Image (cartoon, rainbow, N blue to C red; front, side, top):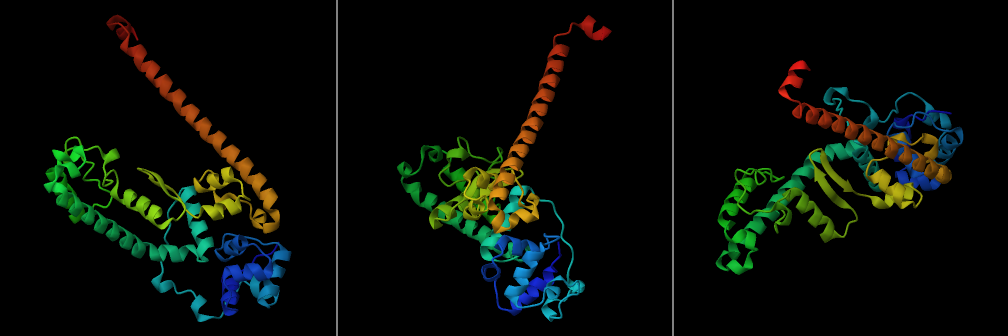
Length: 317
């Protein structure tokens, strides 16, 4: 097994004006393998794979395996204006990063750099949509029949709270979920302007309007549960829908998949590994759930026992 220097692979690929997809086609090496090498996730690579990549790039193998940094200025490290960013992500988010990188042939650093810009764009557009919807409600005030019944007695109060929420850039509608300011009879689960979580409603609407597959399934305190790039998950899972879902929901992490199984020629073995790992993960999850239920049951039984004790029994306890 050899180790390809990620910086050198990227340097020669870009020098040859190739995308990852181009290199994958010319070398007959799976694109996911090339991505893992360039992103530094692959610690070693099989000798025949190194040979295929080197041949496609028309360079000696030592040009790829050398530990020296490439000469190109754009690949020199500039430590003066860079800092390390570290945070832990659940499998479903890590997998989403990987699928986006595969689809658009970019690296995770690019996504992170664009994240603040893209978030502001989406957040401000969601606020703009809410302004439009609020205007619709106000326009309908002259005709009470145009409003759902839950708004007929609370529309004015709702308008004030929604306007305040928008003005303070409360994109998740947390102020509207506060019982102290929420209008009487305001049922967020059936609210026609989607105020259960306005940002969630905006994203769901975007996926519906654009016809893009996936979107948010539900939103918890820990974050949204969503699916994107489902076609890549299905392809990676060799057409097995259950395993594709296991990748999308994070039951199996892409970073757990053994490197040698990423090769396109190992698809059958990869599917078998995914099925085994998913079964193990579900069994572990069920065991944790069982242990939690047992702990809760024991605790409640103990409380019930104490509650039924007489004063004399409790004194002698």
